[in-house]
Length: 218
Figure 1 (cartoon, helix red, strand yellow):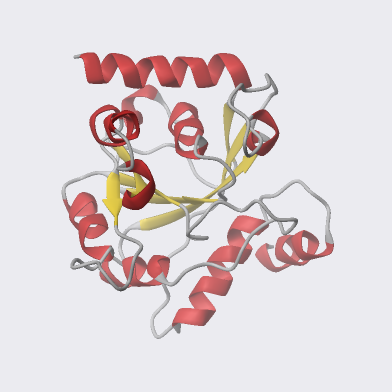
Figure 2 (figure 1 turned 120 degrees about the horizontal axis):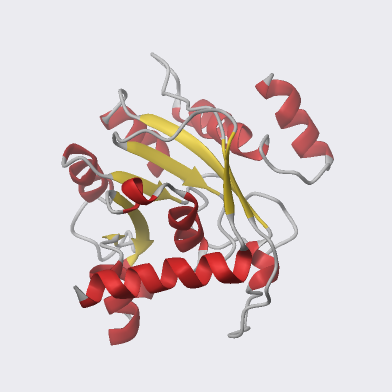
């Protein structure tokens, strides 16, 4: 009960601070396992995506998060594990004993949707989007029938800049694009490039890379 209250409180706070709305441009909300993959600039990104989902989908949608960050303190552990039922993965290729794709696949098989950040870390640089890590390819390969929905989060990096602890009230938008699948015989680098372009095409900033991605997505 308390765990659910904390999750609802976080969702309510995110809505009050950002006024976030979900724009479903390429698909509609559906109660089936999906992989929502998004740009990543803040630790609050998964909360904002969850807030933009219809209430009936929130309880079955789980963020994929880095265990090394979210298990670092009791408070973080509580938020990640108890409040949001996160799928925690070990990013250290030297010490980990479980393939990170395994718990994600298991969650999909159990009926959950996932919120995934394929850049692998927060993007705090000038580029709109970092190159994608290969995990999204292996996950799409394991479950080719599951839709991968690109999700662009706009403005959250201005609400909570790196190093700041007090959010700045600003409007945010979460845009859901057209789902993609791994095509038969598609190579790993090609899929990572294509999925990244599908996400970049949703970005509102009119730079050259964004324009090229929008043109390719038509």
